[in-house]
Length: 164
Length: 301
Picture 1 (cartoon, helix red, strand yellow):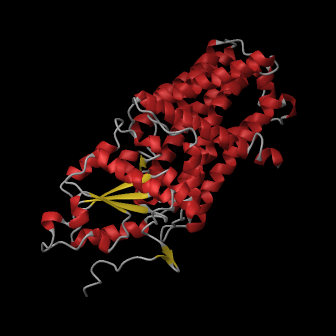
Picture 2 (picture 1 turned 90 degrees about the vertical axis):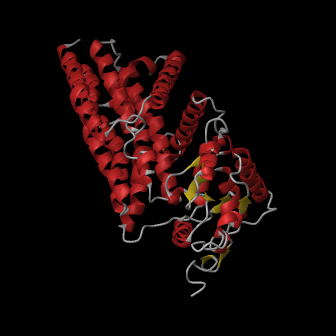
Picture 3 (picture 1 turned 30 degrees about the vertical axis):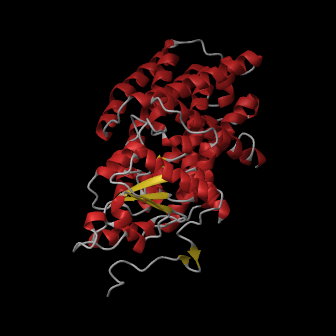
């Protein structure tokens, strides 16, 4: 597992998963991937397909429909995979917390490695958080949230089934 | 077998191809005023893909899905072996190896089509069909351009093409021009990258691939990026680089690097064409140019 993490953190393909976000965090994520910040220095590139993803960046509140899709996308990603929540919405839900269509923070149904608060966080904050996560994983100070169990990765309950 | 697996074959071509793809990425970064990836980045990418899980699409043709990348990788490794063997020992090649080489260089494209159609993904099948149309479009002018040195030397043996000194005929220059543009399409790089089309098909033909099979596809692409310029150098200016001592080797390296630079610069300065524009372009002006070159070569120019 540690060798896998070493290999993974040297070449992260980022998949950008926007769940009904207001677009501010999405714009900041795209800003972080522009030539000015040059994430390819760290081997980080943007991937178009979830099958190529090593790091999922979640943004926005995930409502009752989006949460099911987010969970499905996480299951479709080839493991090992990391997940990072960008912005206040996936961290706490901020003003949408407790609203009729809010389905809990994404941490309730996806194992999330890092939370980046801010509304929206600056590109520098996103890059710093991802690099802190990468360095922590490399030094084995952080354990990946999606730990493999007996039958693949142990996941929290699927959204929609927990309350039923 | 050892030749296929290690020196001019798989291992050597893979390492050389990954270094070439690093050059490509670094130059691209410099063009965009970035710093660019570290030297070992392509190696890290392949290593990472090897430890990732392999996802197979439900309902796809799984056997073919997993076999397709292997076909492409084996073909390009074999093509490189034949090419380098003829460069190292021009007399030890067999008659008709040029034809074998042409078929082997078409195999990576074919493997992409096979893998895309086996993956049961609408975007992948769209990418696969574009790759198919692109292949049909560029193969005609490419084969015509390859015919030009064959007509000049009257041989389909790579060894003979290498030993014969090109007399810098106008037909050769014309054919090289056509071959360079066809090479860009064969590598499916911008402006002919419709099969992948990151922005519209999000990976296109490769969309369902993950883990080691994707690593094989990436390796195949990198190896093609290395092998195709070598092929063109051998084909059109072979006589200048073989049996000419150190100066010849140096000239070969410089020419190879020049071709790679042309690929990278074109890739960074052009937008993507539509597939119908590409087909019209290859069947129209490119085929006409290649035909003119072939006729000129036949007339002895």
